[in-house]
Length: 227
Ligand code: AMP
Image (cartoon, rainbow, N blue to C red; front, top):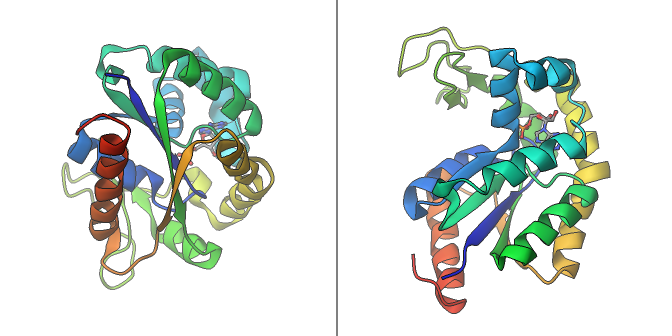
C-alpha cells in the first residue's frame, strides 16, 4: 500500500493549520508544518533557530535549501509510513519541484487541498489570532469577535505571533501571490488531483473539515487505499 500525501495549500490565515490538525485526527496521517518546525527551532535557540529568527519575524521566506532538508528528513520518520499532511510547504515552485521528485521516487499518491479565503477576511482573522507560548494552541476570535486572552489548556497569557501583525501580514500575502500561488499551477501541470475548498464556509472549521475528510476518503478509495 503506497503512502499518501495531502498538500494543504492556501494563503497564510486560510486555515491550513486548523484543517491539518482535524485531518490528522480523522485520518491518522502525520502533520508536517514547516512553520511550526521553524518556530520550534527559534524557541529552542538552536543553530537553525538563530539563523531563521529574523526572517520569520519579517514575514519573508526561509531559503528553499533549509525547508527542503527539514521536510526530506521529516517524511522519512516512522509516523509518516502511512502518509502525511504538508502544511505550509511547498511554498515556492523550486520547493514544489524538489518535493514532487521525492514523492514520485517513493510512489506517494498526492492530493492537493486548496483552501480559498478572501484576503480581507484573512487580515481580520490574523489580527485577532493568538497563540499560547507554552503549548502552541492557536486561538481565533471569541464569539464577540475579540482576541482570546488566556490559554484554556494551561492558563498562560496568549500572544499575537510577530508575523501576524498587520504590516507583516501584508508582506506575507504579497509573498504568497508572488512566490506561492504559482505552486498551484505547477501541481496541476504535474497531474496531481486538486480539491478546491471554501475556507470561509458557514459552520466553521469543523464543518469544512467534514467535507474535506469525505473527499479525501473518496480519493483514497478511488486510488486503491481505504482510510
Ligand atoms: P507559517 O506558520 O506556515 O505561516 O510559516 C511561518 C513562517 O515560517 C513563514 O512566514 C516563513 O518565514 C517560514 N516558512 C514556513 N514554511 C516555509 C516554506 N515552505 N518556505 C519558506 N519559508 C517558510
